[in-house]
Image (cartoon, rainbow, N blue to C red; front, side):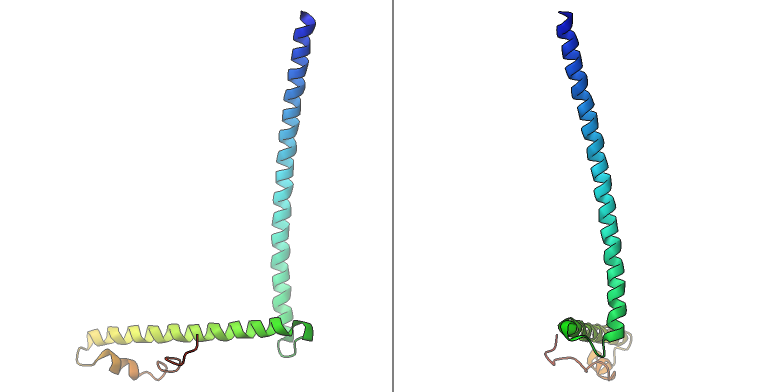
Length: 127
């Protein structure tokens, strides 16, 4: 009977030790995966900086195999400029309305039309 309990004890101990080892291994794997993920992010950041540097150095004469990417950047930069201009137009219109509230003798359109920057991209169909 003693051998039976000893056998159960040994099997339980072995099972517990295996569970501890598995937990330690899982924790070590998680730690290494986290380290890898952080290092991949650092590589990506460095690659972005290299790309920015390369772009700035070559934007006037891009390599043929990268021409489409350089053109994509230019198109996106132009789109951003248009959006910023539209934001400025909205800000100007808001300021004109606020000014009109302070000067009820002028209509908001009169205040808005007095600023020559307001009409540059309005209604031209560009987005």
